Length: 308
Image 1 (cartoon, rainbow, N blue to C red):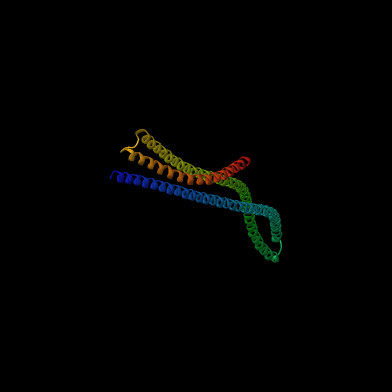
Image 2: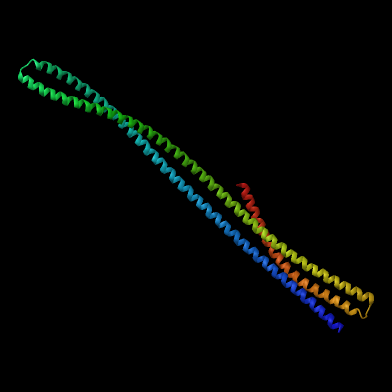
């Protein structure tokens, strides 16, 4: 009965050790899957940063097109101001002509008054002619009033043309200011594009560093597993040494079964530890090669970033 109970305990311990080894293998597989998912997320972030840099370049091209449109509008405003100046010159010439015309009309009125004084000394025919001249003088006065009004309107029009010229010059200044602001916006857009490119480079380097960190964490997990398996081997060898020492010290007796169970437990522990350690060494070689590749890539990226 004691032998059966000891054998059951040994079997239970063996089963527990096997289950622990299987759970450790599952944990390492889960860690490797998590590392792959982290790599996929880093690649998606790199694609997003590249798309953002392309959008920034498109915005820069649109800003340049808007700057060219502003220059064309400024040229049109300058042409309009030149037309306004020509119109004001023509209005001034018209006012001079109107003034000369009014002078000639005033002279005509004086001559008409003289004719009326002479016509009073004439005959009845002269009276009729006087009446006609009076009517003509009334029409001349009305024409003079109309000409004076027209002169006033011409002066008003000249003033309005001058104000329009001032406003056109202000509009030209505002157009120049808008052109300068658009140029500054274009320069800021180029700076933003350059910053986006730098951000993309930093994100790529960060992705590579995240990959190296993931590889190092996986490598650390593999090393931890190897350390655990070495602990199993060391524990098994300790049990074997303890059981052998007890058997040699006390000899054969009723406690020999316990000593044998210690030796069997140590042998199984060392066997499973050696088996898991061989598998872990294979994983370690694989991860060591990957880590060399990661470290070479990161060193090249760091050298390229320093040159830039």
